[in-house]
Image (cartoon, rainbow, N blue to C red):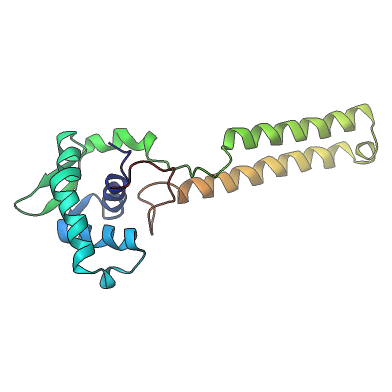
Length: 172
């Protein structure tokens, strides 16, 4: 379900609009995101391409999976309670990012080397007071965690603004 960019865009938009959207507004916003223009500059052709794909394929698939409720006659799209089960899959990790697990492993190895250098008395580590060394390690991990939290909040579908950069997957 989430391998398609347009379906992710649908979920992103619905999460921004408290789970309810008019089909016309949804189409205009997705066309704007796809073409990198404001919604007021989306052309008829761009809207038509998105409308056709959403109406004939993506919205019915999401509706069949009970992720959304799509009323074609009224032109309404509503996020269902079942969509909350997808939360674990909605974090977008760009393909060029270093995984946070590897980052923390590297930071842990660096800090361990630093502490061992202080403990064994290697220069220049032996010149650093133990409290200063402990403070430095703590500050590094705390700052990293703060950056991690901020990064994750921007890379979550439904965050304000454009959808986050993607890992790839099917385009339309």
